[in-house]
Amino acid sequence: MRRPPLPTAVALVGTGVAAVQAAAASIDTSWQPFANPPPLAWLVAPFTLLPFWAAYLAWEVLVVAALLLAWRLAAPGAGWTKLAHLTAALSLIAVVLALWLGQACVLVAAAVAVAWWLLRRGRDVEAGLVLTVILLKPQDAFLVPIALLVAGRVRAFAGWALAAGLVAAIAALTLGAHGLQEMLRDLAALEGVALNHRYAVSGTLGQAPWVLGLQALLGLGALYAAWRRRASVEMVICAGLLGSFLLTPHLSLQDFTVLIVAAWLMLRTAPPLWFRFFLLTGYALAVFAIPIGGAPLLVVEVAWLAALAAGLQNHQDRRPQQDDP
Image 1: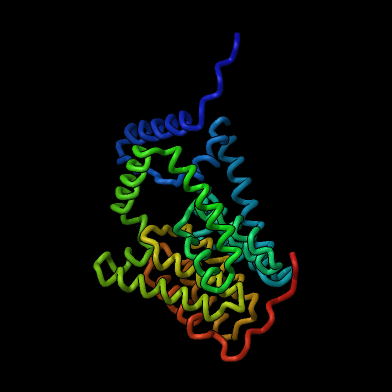
Image 2: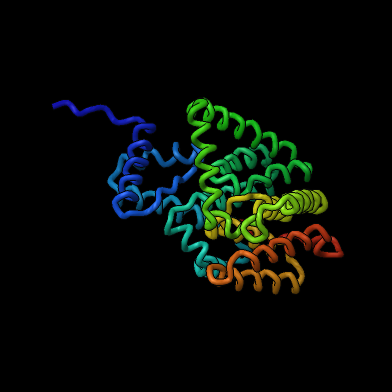
């Protein structure tokens, strides 16, 4: 008996959505859409050909490998010191949630680390291409390419813009007008769920016009910090990541996995002792992020950005650590 042809990715995704809706109805709970961008759906679609647990385990292997790659490239030091950074990261509830839920933010964190590694070696175009992975979860790092442009890394920005523009065009064509409308509707529905922006600026300060103005100023501050610290690609990337977190309206706890890469890169620049204690304070707040909420973490982000914009060090930056993964 001849086997039927494999279902298309679109049919598979549609079947999955219907199954989740049915499951939600069966346990008498509300249906909440997951407005993942098309590139993430393309990446996940092949896994739907496997049984659920096999697909989950395969995806988890990919996500864990991405975290290990980010750690191997970005974390400073060697030996036990480097291992301590991995242990500290795995002790955060944000990272645990990101791994358990298979969040794409881990893939974005790995892409940022790889892009930094390439930029340090003068391979700007390749770094820009790698940053296209940001499209899997744009809110976590969308300002990084713009920060690189402001810092004079034109080739990196051009590589990202060309690749990201091509992917966006293909996504728009595959969705069509109706699909784009559905995606915008789902995004609007998600904004009505408080948990989705509890750790964003809007989740802490509300959505009044003055908050939007404040966010605009913070975004400009991030670009100014990227320009001022343009000699240090580590600090440019940190400014872009912080600006992304302060501008986005949609931010979950697990997204803070990306900021761990920022902390690792900052430690590579041999910052002053007071800033190391500052990062340690931010880490302690992240440990208790669920009970204390997003306000303390927001203060850390703004203070971190202010330190970058103010110069952080009065003397010339010391050469980053030279351990080469």
